[in-house]
Length: 339
Image (spheres, one colour):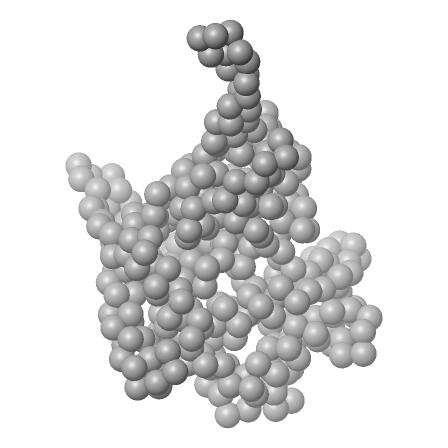
């Protein structure tokens, strides 16, 4: 859409839909608006989202509500240590016809959906976790030499318990990098927790309805991709990503001190897609530095790794990222943009 006026009109109409979607989600997932905005940002950007938090914070409820509001066909798989890749991707069965001739028949697994919910993804073995790698990157799976395309749109929304808990396996770095955002779901505040108790322990539960369907969601994703990003803002994003890479000419001193490895180009791609979606959810027609600040921890925290000494000292990844972010801003990178 090359006409700026038409683009603004379309984005204004989309903004009203997004307000309605957030209201619907908020009716079942009480409070924590930032978690809702970031989860929706990942979907609107066409990416995948990893929700991290201790059990009982409503992560599964959020994903289920998102699927309903976005009008997507959802498959939910509970990840357990005995889960096999075939339980996700499907498998070939040996059939025999009436003439006695045998042949293989492929039975599709739950991955063939529009929204795949990997519940407690880090409770399955690394072998099973890796079954999602091709699906998340290429939107297709290969079984017995044949390639099968997945639905459009296709999103993976995974929940994860903190890796310090028993019975968990760390996700492979290659898989973490495929998640557009990692969203931390924390404990609710006092008032929010009281509202949660009152709304979930009565005789009825909040009823939500779809705002989008698969086709309208794809249209919204395509529209958001047309939002312009200023050259200065794109340069700021690149400076931030490259500053988080240790032992390079553009490394920040904190990255050299605390990170063993840093984000690759997918991080900058995630920023470019994510800040457009975040801006749309905030009712803006173009992303600003404020969107970069809002998404920086979620884009970067799963794409860097702390050195052992930093972990032993209790250093938190998000604190290092925020410190680097503030230094870039203080140095004039992102000047003139809303903080």
